[in-house]
Amino acid sequence: MGCKTLWSSRLGRTETYGPAGMHELGYSAPDWHKTLLSDIGSEGRANKDPFITKDEEPGTYRPYDLGEEMGVWVNNSDGITPAVGKAWPPGDSVFPDYTNPRTVEWWTQMCLEFKDVLDYDGIWIDMNEPSNFLRGQYPGCAVNDINNPPYVPSISDRSLAQKTLCPDSKTYLGEHYNTHSLFGWSQTAPTFHVAQQATGKRAFVLSRSTFVGSGKHGGHWLGDNFSRWKDMHQSIIGILEFNLFGIPYIGADICGFNYDTTYELCLRWMQLGSFYPFSRNHNAEGNNEQDPAVFGEEFAKISRATLRIRYSLLPYLYTLFFESHVHGGTVVRSLMHEFTSDQQTHGIDTAFLWGPAFMIAPVLQEGARSVDVYFPEAPWFDYYTGTKLSNTWRKNYVTVAAPLTKIPLFIRGGYILPEQAPATTTTKSRLNPFGLIIALDEQGEASGSLFWDDGDSIDTIEKENYFLAKYTYSKVSSSIQDTYIHTGRSQPLNLGNLKTEILKNGYRGADVLKYNKITILGLKLTPHAVALNGRAIHGDAFSYDMSGPGGPGQQEPHGFQRRQMQSPAFGTDKPRHGYRMGSESLDSSSAAKVLADKKLTMSKQGTLAAMKVNSALGA
Image 1 (cartoon, helix red, strand yellow):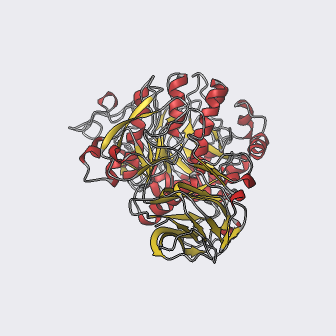
Image 2 (cartoon, one colour):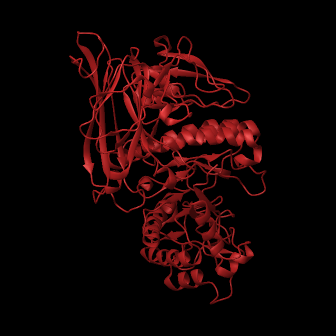
């Protein structure tokens, strides 16, 4: 199982430790960190809490000394003396005021210097509400209307100062009463900018505290949850809400943060969490380990299989993030978002969609081996088998099998999903061939798009250094000559045409990337002949059979059979959706014409920017 990111949790506790402190934390040297990341081909995220210890020897702790000199702390109600509380660092702590421009200068300098101590690719800013282990700072909050307003919401201990600072503390923009909710927001933007300055790459920032607009500069996770089934269920509500809040890069701690998890809960959570936009297994110190390997080979195998589905669909997910960035809107969305007139969808929080077209229906109850899934009015296909679900399932709840090895997944007809062969990291996956899953609607049509860039450069959209293609599959009536596809019929055939429209071709890296598989779901007729570039493909280049499910434990929707075809040219690896052909190129003038039934997978090489495929559907 691959490791995309190494999370350095509370390394240095916001600069509390310099190089010598790394030894105290059990790190022999920053070189160990760099070597590990290099060996596994992953990235490093440094965790930084906002509080700064004030009790080191004067002149020995630069972050505090410089901050004191620059006057960057949140102050007491007098507006002069720093507010002093208690948090993770030894001794007492002060709190940077990120609404102060001077604090941004200080923070920028500290993050740049820390890059030389410990290399990082992104920054995780934690506990930035700000969190304080006391009820207000020392010596306690004064009795006044600001600290004790007439109305207090239902919060911890019914006190605005509980586990944070007194509301009458002074920040650059005013009283903490008015700026408390802006603390994490005001830290996120400067962290984003300094991360880009330090790394020279697109920034990664993850913040525990957010506000309106935080999604422009960072992602969020849902905080310290618990290893309970109800927390897993509630995480779906959380990721749906934060997409509506404009923070689409969102997830929950997979398997739970507090308490010890269980085998089944963690396995089901790994399956669900594979489809969080931000997917991370995160555990509290002192709990039993909960990484997939600790539960044994079978657990790891199931988790790996689900994560590979996530990785294979990253081009689709990445495109959704592009659309969210440019046009607004959500990446993860509820069924109600797509089917607003269907009253049944309005209360569903047990399933969700990636974009408009990919439904995830996780198991959320202990011991369950099936889930009740509601299917709105649309054609739906089983992701695993490619078979179309019965029309009788529409606008109904259907009990769908969900053994421990499987999370139910469905594709909505009328859409085209780009995919890519998965690898252990996104860096390696980006080198693999692409594919398209074309799920037809009732009219035999579908559309979709693909956004792609180098994944690291800054402002590729603004600089137009990206690739964007729109795919449209539609039917046209055409008479096919015998010299092109010999069917023995003289009547016109319905020709299915896949059109690629290049909307932006500004990323030269796309020139060398290839498609090697095109899957069409929802075709109606049995294949009789195949041609590519005007030449017939002989029978020994592909095979067709009526075999059932493609793997052990996979179940077909009732009343449907899976049709599977395979080319000997691609070895013994069975395709998920069906058809495999030889290895000729598809260039801009290529046209593959295929008469096919149910499901067609063509495994061919073709560039992202040059592809035209036709499928003859029969009379």
